[in-house]
Length: 130
Image (tube, rainbow, N blue to C red):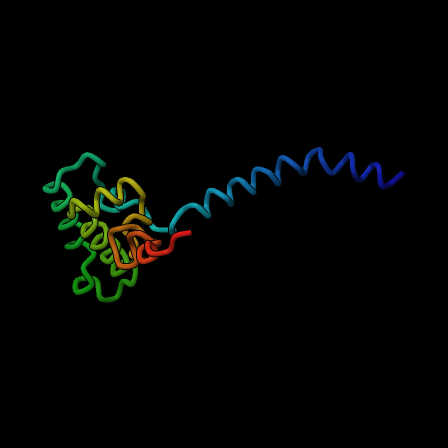
């Protein structure tokens, strides 16, 4: 009798909670990293031109440069983050990859065509035929 109660309670309130947390975990796993969006880092819109991106970067670089913030560890991290964002968004090819695939598009370890290790994983196996 206790066994039947266990089965009927198992599907009621705990199933939706487990399902939603599983879905959330799945979504997080899809994200390539915990990095902030490069457009947000620089404070520019996705349609910004190179001039706006450069101006925003220079403003942040001046504000957070390690030489002017020697005692502030967070400033050095913000400077690195702004520099990485600028390097990607100021390069047409990298910006296109970033816009299409997010951080995974510009991560050389992700296997996209932009960095080392990208390309056709089956290259070199063309001579095998049945």
